[in-house]
Picture 1 (cartoon, rainbow, N blue to C red):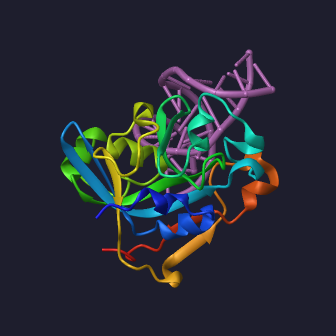
Picture 2: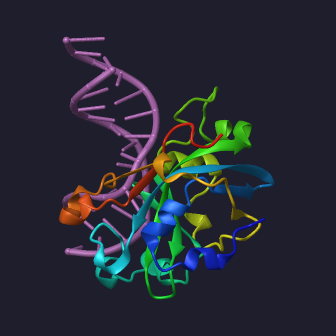
Length: 194
DNA sequence: GAGTAGATCGGCT
DNA sequence: GCCGATCTACTCG
């Protein structure tokens, strides 16, 4: 069963980032089904978070989708070649999002290998946000899609014990000053889902 | 195995 | 005109 859009409209983005661990994400693009369990996330807390694109209420063509009610995709191009998959959260006009940094592939692995131009599965297939989006076949053209659609959706996963979760600072946001130190990164210890 | 450079483009100053 | 919520290949040791 798909997670409803209301799930993403929860008002605490860090709590949601933690809760997303272990949930299953699926995409069906060009009739090819791929998916896996989410193993790493980062929360971006909106107007007060210097690391977030929407910091200070910045509203541009790119960030516009973050101001939507929670439950849509936010996918953008980074460093000119990598796509980043985010889930928009919270209510309308509270521009928060969660970056999906890693998944554990469960279905469509052959398709992911082709998309990632790999011969054999290894640890790097879906580790890192750029790799996740590429393996799932997502690009910036899949921006602003509802997260309960036929192209991309979430399903419930196993319960995760608090002790299987590692919390730490976010990656690659040194420019955010003090906010770079916030404990907004969540990941599952290896083996916590199977 | 660790460190570094190159790729490559859209959004913002 | 600069630099980013990155990844990979290649170097050197």
